[in-house]
Length: 339
Ligand code: AMP
Ligand code: MN
Image (cartoon, rainbow, N blue to C red; front, side):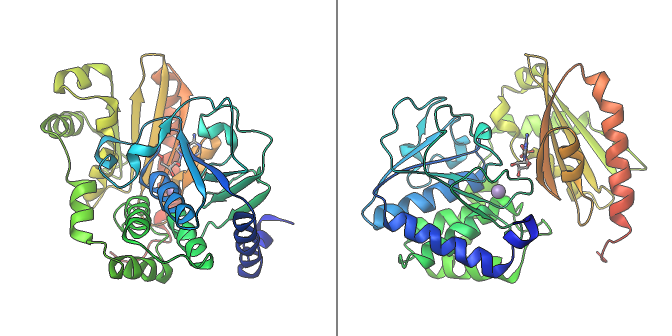
């Protein structure tokens, strides 16, 4: 079966049914997602966990890294176990959310068991016993929502909160180009179930520390503008973090700020680690495709939000990469809608 066949609605429906059967037939579940979890991975895992508990199942969630600080107060986040290896797995099934392969979980010891693989990224390697891959979903949380409905589980406020969190964050607060009527239909149902969108937006996007505000100032102050202002480049190093009293975790979301300037079509954010690794995050508007750029460097993501990690030094990778992004901008703006 090729990839496009996998994504036809009929096939996707069959996979969802098989996943429902597999869930009903099992009792103990281990849920995980990619390392350095974001709002979609946290929301998808916890929505799934609450749904499984509602069915009377036993659930563990194991992640390689803790959730970003401002997600800690969301229901159930404090139950996520942080571990880089699971030695004894007392589960009948593994459920992996939005992870292209098992290695991306950053958790060792997950191989060789019954695995349900749910993802909305291109390039997923189909490593599961059951693979539900739908690139048309704005967030993995959309797929979890569908699964919860199929399982006949009432939409509690906890499940609705996590589905909404997944969508709110993975769409870049409804900015990215993969938003469909389904996205809003799910959000409508989440709001009917008790989610308060203003509070969600405040908790997710307006929870900055004063240090983070200073970090924003310092990063934007040093921002480079290339390609007649269409490409913004940000750099993060330990000096900036120390000067503003912040940590790497405080950088989340900052990459989106340059896109608020009308001219800027894409942003590259270089985060220089002490180990010599450079974490590159990319964002773009409309049809400017940064996923293709990231995938050429061993990473991935979505058209408007992608990333990868390379070995330094920065000078060796920067110019070639920026040229690729300028080319992507050129290609993307040709098909750009008005606005
Ligand atoms: P980030 O810039 O880290 O917020 O990542 C943006 C998007 O790119 C997210 O959807 C990530 O899942 C995806 N992404 C980042 N790094 C990688 C990678 N190394 N491989 C695959 N996808 C990635
Ligand atoms: Mn996602």
